[in-house]
Image 1 (cartoon, rainbow, N blue to C red):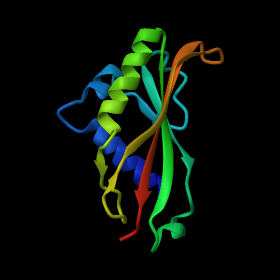
Image 2 (cartoon, rainbow, N blue to C red; image 1 turned 30 degrees about the vertical axis):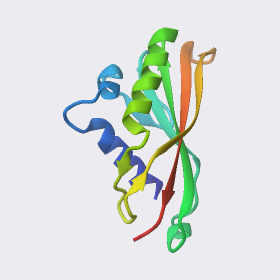
Image 3 (cartoon, rainbow, N blue to C red; image 1 turned 90 degrees about the horizontal axis):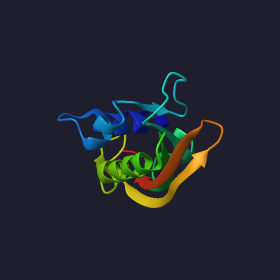
Length: 133
């Protein structure tokens, strides 16, 4: 299930015409961990809570995922966070095998210095409800 969810998020991200989040990250959005060659202005998404696929057969279940944005400057990191929110908050996704779902922003963490990556990092968490068709 998570593969289908992230495919639908990525499809929204790369939809044409290009959105400002896609443009600002130069098309660099990856699942879980970014390639080491990405050194500035990119995003990483990951599930923060997810159930096995068979949990979504009859009931509506909550799912949370987050997007982390990275930049060498704090101001650009803020900008990436706002562009991500503009793209995904209240967006409707079509996930294979599930009814259409609405994304909602739940939390966001402002840019903080990430010593491990030597970049500014900000996080935005989204919530959605899934039900299998």
